[in-house]
Image (cartoon, rainbow, N blue to C red; front, top):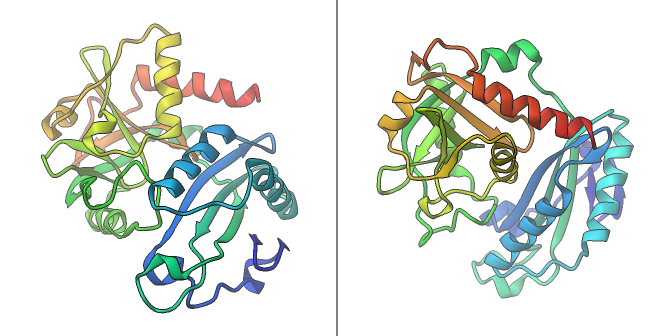
Length: 284
């Protein structure tokens, strides 16, 4: 990992963040998680742009340029020796007194963490995930705007805990109106009657980087797609359901709430989009 207070990549066991860092105390931080392909970051410009939007959204000034971030990203990935890495960029508001007032923290902290990229194999993608619609509600924008990727992740953790306790792999959260929002770590897509649907940003979701890529791929493949509100019963009645994230890309949900989605295998439209996505990665 790279830590701005040290100024070089180092083993995480050697790294230390002060206990008075606001990221630790209050979750007063923003982050991005992305992967490399052939050693290069995937969707770098989109991720850094979202990092800056998130920082602006919480009033956090980033003193690093995109070029600075890229230098630290590349150096950290290279130091691992991994062929490809999962990389998380975290910026906290920095150290301050034990009080909420954010004006007391003057110097942000940057951490870049890289671990080996661990993806499902071909059989794993075909087998897909078990997902569950949980009763943990996505926080409304009036409380914490979901368009900002912040370190306040306890609701997502609680949602995932509920899904894991039921023997599932991923949680799907609804918004305060009872509409499908997103997964604990993913965006949600459903295929109904040959049309691809995904909740609109206005339903309280993070504008996912891979979500946007998949919508572009759908257009290029002449797949009809709509950003439209989904009720839980729409998801349960869907012909196909899949999730998207910056690490795994598109991955099928083959069991939802304990019942198979159609025949319990990756659907044809999901497969087409996943193959197109993987082809894009291979061309980087």
